[in-house]
View 1 (cartoon, rainbow, N blue to C red):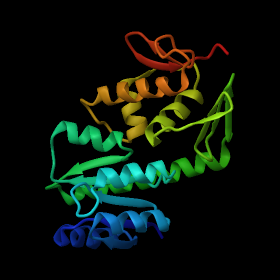
View 2 (tube, helix red, strand yellow; view 1 turned 90 degrees about the horizontal axis):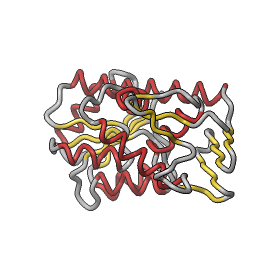
View 3 (tube, rainbow, N blue to C red; view 1 turned 90 degrees about the vertical axis):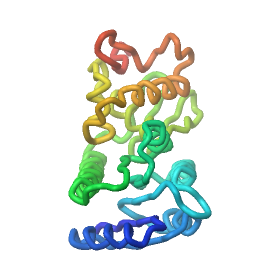
View 4 (tube, rainbow, N blue to C red; view 1 turned 180 degrees about the horizontal axis):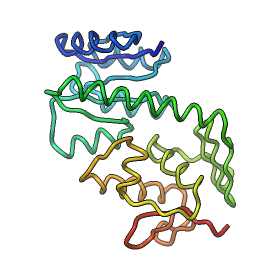
Length: 232
């Protein structure tokens, strides 16, 4: 049975979500303030965290950032009344896996939950059967432990930075468009947010490249997108 934590201070919203997720036979727990939600998420294992941004005591962005800093990579679906583009970008770049705004249609919400669960099942299956350690020169990627070592030192990556690196490193030489990376990493067509991919690539280069302006690992394919160097 999948376990879902809902961190939402609006009882009407949390009750609506509970009703529909229980129909999917999910085990649901609810917390109505940010501090309690963070403590619950950091203490017990969950398959998904549904997280409001505007919460008492600790907001959803802070919760997401703190969980990721503690190497908690439970998928997070952010839900909020805010609809401005900058809020969506901040939510995703803080480590959230998806983002939906109120008011939302329950069918779309459930579809996104199912998509996240489906991706997690796929990742788990691939991790069980695939190579766990990827090496290129002084760069080592431990996919199972979600750990990156460069020059014998650990590199701290956000979940999306790590997923981007693993995807490209496992397919060196293949060029990915920004749209493809959005689809593969974020899980669905996030049309219009290609600049989010650019931002993640730039930060990833800053962390793993000796000279981000002259990268050795993550290369630009002009007119297409990005690829991992296959000439090692």
